[in-house]
Image (cartoon, rainbow, N blue to C red):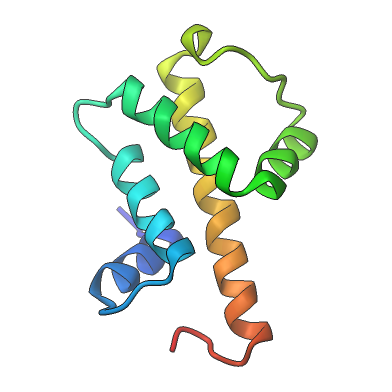
Length: 107
């Protein structure tokens, strides 16, 4: 199986000694996304905490994907995994963009 760029980023972050808060959030979200068996309650909590911490991410996902907010207790496992993955992509792009803009690409 071919590994994605996101997987390479996660591997890099897991080996990095000192993570920034957004980098730590990426790793924790990845761990929740890949948990086996998938813990629906942990996924709901992680989605909620990420949305609270990054409101711009929440609105970006809602607008670009035409997601409709719904109570998490009505969410399916597939919906939660899809939403966690979208959060991972958004956070990875933000961390990468910030590193490039600030001249510290994965320092």
